[in-house]
Image 1 (tube, rainbow, N blue to C red):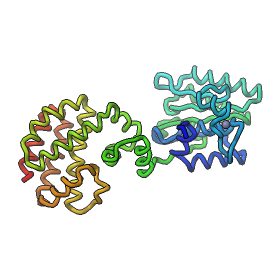
Image 2 (cartoon, rainbow, N blue to C red):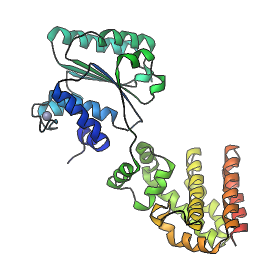
Image 3 (tube, rainbow, N blue to C red):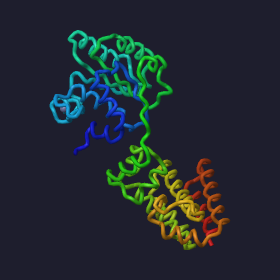
Length: 335
Ligand SMILES: [Zn+2]
């Protein structure tokens, strides 16, 4: 089935979708909700699914069909009774609330069923919030407002107290793995990616133009030179690693990858991990061989060198110098 807001909502928050479908079937949907959770946890998609369920002409097993005219118009943000607002220039302004308010008034007059989906609730100015709250509390029975926030801590308390807050659970590691797999992310990169972040949108940005794969490949090659005590590890920094790092975030990621390789090594050395849990499963043979031949002192020395590297990085030293000096120190303790 083609991905749409409904399938994404089910994929990310199956339990919440079921819960809301049940609430709507019983006719006990509240007037105002605040959906709170991480970006990408499915808040918008669940809100849209609720809208589809309310308007769908062909509800199947208590769920919207995703195919009828109403469902399609909602999905293409082209339904007159489903009003979607996102923050304008980083905050929800009184003007936007006025627009919503005029929609509210219209529907109150016509007695229409209407749903308002407003993201960025934490950016709402006090004026906008007060204005919104005034009509949220009017008992026009067929209006539902869903506010969405990724940072509940800074949402105005008056909003929190007048809405039903729904906390969206973070995706589990298994969920994330299966999402990355179905997005076609390379198996050998999945553990490493999830060690570095749990945000799928961040991962997608790293994978643009295959940047992450290139960088990972370079770091793996660098490590192979190191374990052979090959001085190429040093020149490789300038010839191959520096060309793939174009900004501070990429520098940070490359450094984090280097730390992760040595963490894999340490965990194998102490028998603390299964090979399928390694951040670098593609290096399992190299890592296992190395783990068998080095002493626990060497493992600790390696980690200390990398921790120093992180400190230098935070101190804004020249990145190439940092990597070169780290490489020399590692070569010293490798054999
Ligand atoms: Zn439908």
